[in-house]
Length: 277
Ligand SMILES: [Zn+2]
Image 1 (cartoon, rainbow, N blue to C red):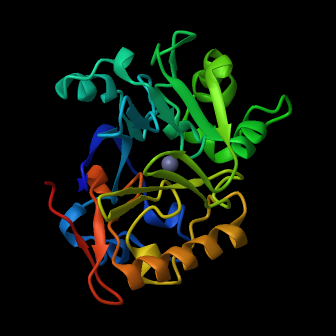
Image 2: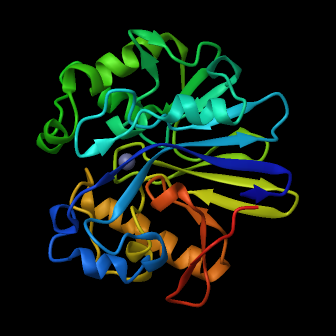
């Protein structure tokens, strides 16, 4: 995806495919596929991709947004490909100057560290202060749903993020991180969930993180993800972006869209996948 002179590449780490009804009460796989028919398998559960966005084009910066599920995922997650994905692009982990986290759930911090050391050895790691305080609190307890999908001894915030604690720099809510890269407060999915706004040469794009997990949450208003930490707040954020994206037709991408592909509203109730260019 190009936004002005910025180049944003989806780097796939893995995927997960679980039944729709386990996290959208009252909805089915077939209903989900109506919204992303071209990108969803016709059999089985809808595929959600996990991975990172590589942002090239900001002066002196090579930025990675989120770090996938890591090298030791738990079924039904498959993963661990981020390192190879970066290598295929000619990017070494040491080249990354900044790692930005949209939020600190385990499927976004997987490659933050490896074997107790920072994986991106030269990077400054960045996230919202509220997520850092929430997930790294000494009394933080992993929710029940994470025990089914992850190995807490490896994937919990402390083992993953403890090794990078002295490299973390936090923003809070709306801020300008770099020229052309803003953080937008989208708290609700987690206390510090963030949308990233990229602007360059008159063009714009939004990385929505986990504000939504599929097109249906934006097109329809009765798809409510069960895993938001603050459901009411999260749904207000979805409402905001449903209107904004529909009104402006700004390109956007969610962290778990199939293939991490970008889309854009085309009319009030239709979203089209954008070609990679
Ligand atoms: Zn996620």
